[in-house]
Image (cartoon, rainbow, N blue to C red; front, side, top):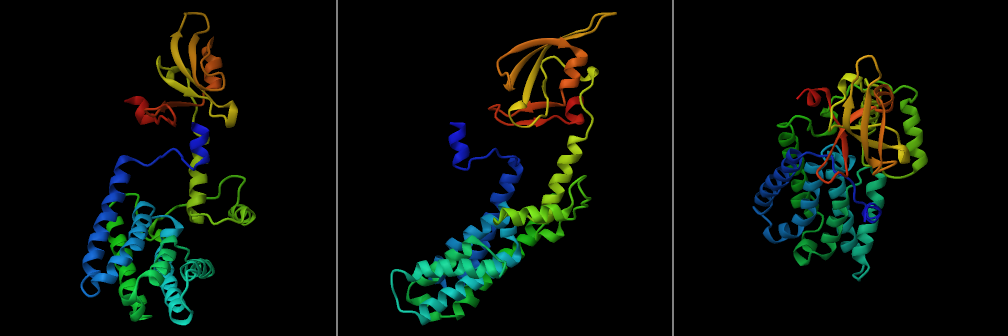
Length: 309
């Protein structure tokens, strides 16, 4: 089951409940505002456009730091795609293939213009399939409601995301103090991304910051003998199949003799097994104290504050 879900693209989610609720709230409020502004003039056309703008709102408020969500991607993606869709309708004969051409052409235009935004292609299709009112509006439809709609979303996103810690929009408002990760230079990342030859929805500075934080965590202090707690979980922090989590079942300290730790392997290599070893051996093996989620599918480190509590 787990392999099947991973094949389908299912991944563990590290976002908090608060982050999910904030994303939903921002999306809802933005679309309410958008609906009101757009319907002031073109009610029927606005109904067609709302679908693609709804997708944009999800990206902007659920992934405010993503490259596909940045203002140029949102504005350029919708406006250029809408213009290409109008050009297809105005200058080419009608046919079943026209909507497909509008979508495919918009992808090429957005990628060359460096504003790839998937909902923009939906806007191109809406222009082709939207009916006589949109067709008659012609290129004026690109300005209103398309341009107005994206400006409403972007401006509201700037104000809304500024209300919450850890959220800033657009991305340059996020101030990362990025130092070079030991052994890895920014040029190494740039070269690796070019070798992958795939579109990555993450800003370069965010990628460096992620690696820097991971490196700092990897270099943090390990587990000491005094830190061992009965019933707590510890990980060896190794990659791949060598990774393992042990639950301490008993710590025996004997005066004048080496202490012993009785443990159970609850995850990873040797899962289901039991063992006993010296405290010094267990401490050398253990790298972090960890805790599982409710389904014991995702394990996270326990910080010093959590250990103290």
